[in-house]
Length: 205
Length: 130
Image (cartoon, rainbow over all chains, first blue to last red; front, side, top):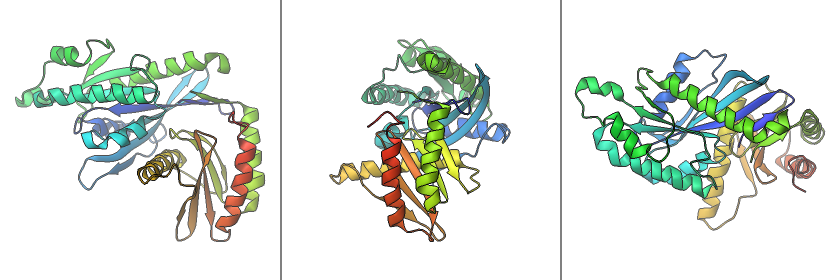
């Protein structure tokens, strides 16, 4: 649920990074946080377990400029990817305005990617949303591991597994070194804000 | 559902918060939605991380509601954390919003709760609920 503050001419929208556990959702946010100036990007909040797994969510507020004279503020969230944390994922998805699905390119994660996307579709459905109506971008992460001779899923196979019925924008990425992180963020921000403005355009004109 | 608030709406919210809560001794009041968006803040504290406060408070509220559901309750009516110097009280406002009130030990929890009931009653109309 986006919030439009006409006294400050500001639009706030919520983008959630979704995907299987250990896929690189938090790494995406960490890269954005580390590489952006503090004027644009707020403090990153992480609620995780003693290890490096996200327990509840990561949160990063960003100011990304102006559209139609309105300042745009995007709140980035990640969900915990592990299967057992579905209730938490549903809580974080509440009021979502855009989704980045971070798929793990490792060959062994093929089924986990498909299960996680099915879980996203189901959880959006429980919120009364259809995946076709929510701005969505796919990111195929960990492509850099190709150089280390680790078996990866070819992009064509990932497209076939995940993007066949969706036909949304997809990006190859390596969140650990930043490749594809900004391309993904730029695309989801553009789609999310366009969608919000289409929905409430009459009210802010 | 998206929320659009006009300057007039924000002005009314600020007035209610000032009259009911800040004048009664609350230090800072934050209004957020249950998705974690910050709607407004008012008070005397310098809050650098108010966006994080709104996001984590919404998550905290949602998690607590889930605990209530697990033990057969619909909701907990009182959500309050007591700190060494500062306390925080969370109240649901209409169906989808949250008021976070920060106050110190010079003000009693009872007074904050009483004033919040009045404030929430006045604010409901702005958020489209009677």
